[in-house]
Image (cartoon, rainbow, N blue to C red; front, side, top):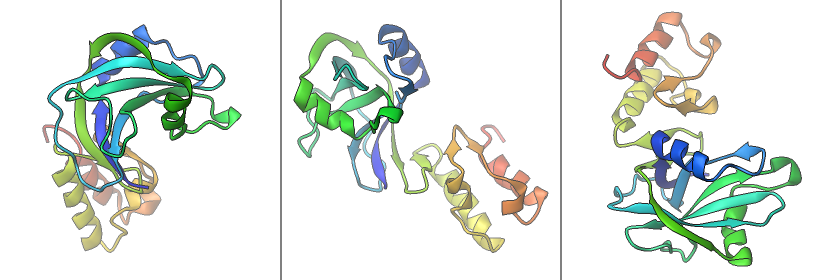
Length: 185
């Protein structure tokens, strides 16, 4: 499943985790979803947490205002799935439902920093900063006769490539690909 939206900055995540201590074992605190399109959306001018919602049994979410509105184009609320209990059957997508069922507990607006991105069906996160590097890596994979999405099956996060040497033809090839995702090289 592909989707686009905005990643929560590490600094904003740290600040929000101090303010809203997660109640459930699986902390998400990752992004605000915009839609299911495979494209990086526009950057936001303003973003702030304006509310909190929980069902008190296994899910909590933060309601977000983006550029002055809480409502997405599809009618759902902008939100950050905060924490949940997967063992009890909760999924991040359930956040949309509990906002309507439980209502929003307003809070003093808290400004947050977001970065536009989209996530493809391999869980590779594309931002404006890394999209060109990811495409270079995929082209290199194609030239080596490898599946260009092989690294997506293990997850690509924070400029690192998680995979095993068995998936590549040589250690040198893996080193070359890793260099593409190392800032400053």
